[in-house]
Length: 85
Image (cartoon, rainbow, N blue to C red; front, side, top):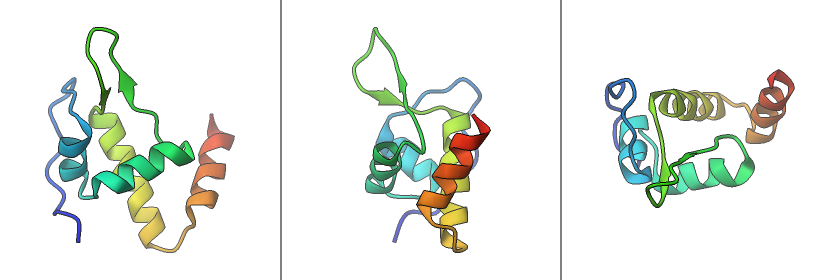
């Protein structure tokens, strides 16, 4: 069972995947899967190694997770997102 979602992170704060997962209330593997499917795209900083997540990405992760929990397929969520781009 993923950890309980926390409050929205401070604006402009960047966090690594484990902290982002805790904040969004999902597992690390869920975030990795969303990245693999193209549902989210982490921020890459040239001066730092790794992938980072901000408040907007946390909100997006939560939305995707809620839509999926309410019966939408990840494929349908992705297609809707790609149409809006």
